[in-house]
Length: 305
Length: 105
Image 1 (cartoon, each protein chain N blue to C red):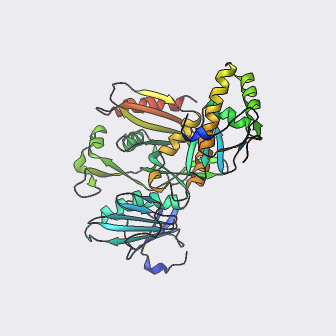
Image 2 (cartoon, each protein chain N blue to C red; image 1 turned 30 degrees about the vertical axis):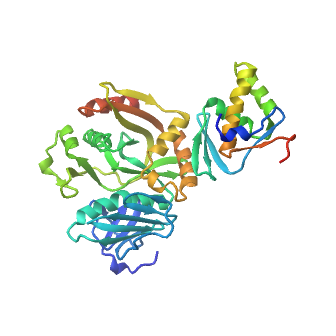
Image 3 (cartoon, each protein chain N blue to C red; image 1 turned 180 degrees about the vertical axis):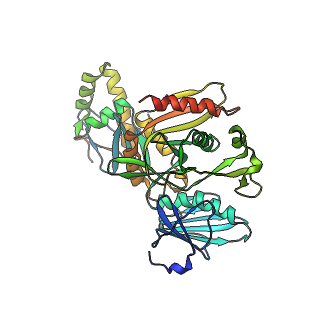
């Protein structure tokens, strides 16, 4: 990509990609690099994209374009997996903007690059790459944070990018930060007043991580966490098409991008990953998050092979 | 039987053939498929996956049922009925082509 590098004072690395930015992005690791894979710039954004294939309340996605409009904050426009343009409406909301960039915006960008981002947090624990996946509120970040306390290193929070090197399936390190809800901090025995909220009036906090793993790690297990109305934990190892469906259903922002031409590559990547990883579904009681009990179950599964 | 399936004529001599507009893969012996035309994923259970494997080359409906009867403990009547339904579903989704030699195309 040809850009005038002096226009981009902020340099980062995220998902193994060099990022040149005109705006500071809270949460990304600074990284000196000469050539960008991605640029983030300020600019004016079209009201609509030309040929939307997926549409939601806040977004439109086309073959090579993605537009996200957040009222009272900013508009975001992603092109060809390379360029993120931000049109800021509210000048006093840098961290909020960063949070959107590192969430949906990067999710769309990774899909445009025809990669496989899973909705989940990942750690490296005893040389095993582990992804904790599941719906929002399932406890992905919380269980990842619990593993950090056990000596694991963080690979990713919320978006776990899968890559392949020769025959090995890997988790690509994302960026060294986590976002944790107030309730989850309490579950982990932490005091919320010691942390900074990621957005104003949101009880979700930046959770500093000292042990970030900066290299790709071979992935060995995916745990799909769910909740139910029962007092019991339900544990099931997945096989065959269940594995495929689990990967599909836990692909980050899949329903926002599935009509934009990603399917052939997505299908291929899910099928490359499935045989290389053990996938276990764990359904936990929805009342009172027993994170230690969940960790215990996961440790038993990890010890099985 | 689905509404769309009612128009299909499948007899013993009907030749079944995979269409070329899909990608498929196997995980633990189960077939997952992407129909490029429909932009949809499909998964098949063990028997469905076996049928898909048997359709690697064009095959008459009767030969397909015969092959399944050799592998599964099921009555011919049951096997014919279930296979018929499954083939109809595949045809509705445009995953197999049905060529009946007796019928005008």
